[in-house]
Length: 195
Image (cartoon, rainbow, N blue to C red):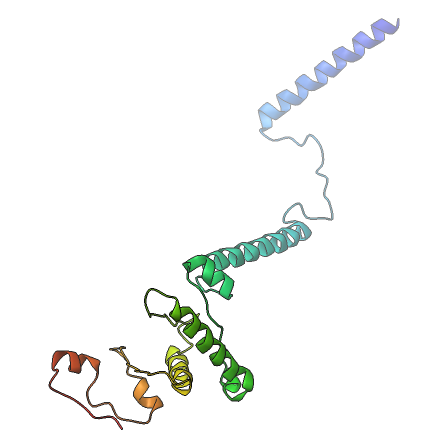
C-alpha cells in the first residue's frame, strides 16, 4: 500500500512538472519562486575594496622606494666611494655654510692636507682628484681651501681654473678674468700679471 501511494505521488509530481513546463512554453514567462532580497549589497564590498586599496597602495609605495634607491647614483659614505671606485679617500670635509667658521671645518682640511702630502711622497705620480657627492656642492671652495692649507705648510701651489664653461675662481679672489685658460693655450703671447 505504501508503494502504491509513493508511485501515485511520483506520477502527480511528474504531471505537475509537465504542466509547469507547458505553462512556461506557452507564456514564455513564469515565476517559479519569489525573489529573496538581502539588506547588504552584493557588490561592491566596501570593506574589501578599502583593505585591498590600502594594501596595494602600501606595497606599491615600498616598491617605488626600493626602485628609486637602487637607481640612485649618489655615494653616501667614504667606504662606499672606495668600494665603487677603487680609489683611496683621504678625508671628508663638511660642506654646510655654517660649518665653514668652526674649528671642525678647518680640521677637515688639515687632515686632507696631511694625508695628501703623506700619500704623494710614496706615489708614482703627484696627481689627486677632488670631487663632491653631488653637483650642488661646489668643489672650487674645497680646492681653494686645500691650496691655502698647502701654502701655509710651505708648499708651492699653482691654482688653475680649467673649467671652460664657468670661471668661478675669479669670484673667490675678487678679480676679473680677462683671459682664461683657453685663451692662454690658444694665444700664448697673451700674458697677464697676477699680484
